[in-house]
Image (cartoon, rainbow, N blue to C red):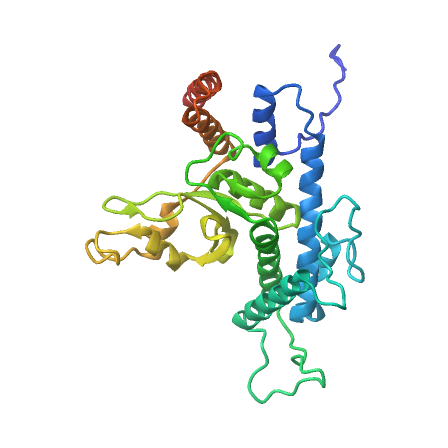
Length: 327
């Protein structure tokens, strides 16, 4: 009414994720590169991680307590594992006879699952009755405890896939190919920049329903950083994923070892309080993620002598920094 034209309500725009930012930056330099295979590769890796997660939940007994419902849903159903594409290079279900190297991989996965389950309080107390097969008797977990165990199993599944199966590892001085997420997904393994590995890990975790936050470890005054510059944080649990150490889970107190105070034990300037440790792990918003990706592209191009590419990324960085200063 009132002579004004009726306007339709615009649907909410989907949130841009760190992996999508990485793909869009790649498209700036290579506009004709079709990234369909890269996006399909993310889904394929997420499917494999979901299957490993599903298996760990069953083997650890958490599935019987309800903690594996999310894993079953992510893996294509609680009763059956997800179908694997014929293009998949990894067969995650080992043959019964004869035993193969993949059988050893599964046994290692089972042992890690059992250790994680025991560490989280899932082992049977001394003297508790067990079934004839030797597995622990059922225990009732609270919803919070079950969810925590299930999330940690999901993280261990991603760790197993990326660092044991695919053999990804952080490169101290990455090349442009090692800093590029599309190249990592097409290569499926090998050396990669720490930050790009963090983005890949967080992407797979998001596909499995586990939200992770990229953080930069910034030492307070009087401290020196002696560990990874970037970590992934798991919300209220205050767990951190150390990608530099092949996805090892760290607690808040573990961060103190990365912030040296002069004598290796923090004695020179005193120990850091939990509040100081939390402040040292600074969350990165999407703008900071984008800026870091551009900086890595610039630095890696310059390190291998691709001066034209380095100048291109330098110009992009300056434009982005100027834009962020205006906000």
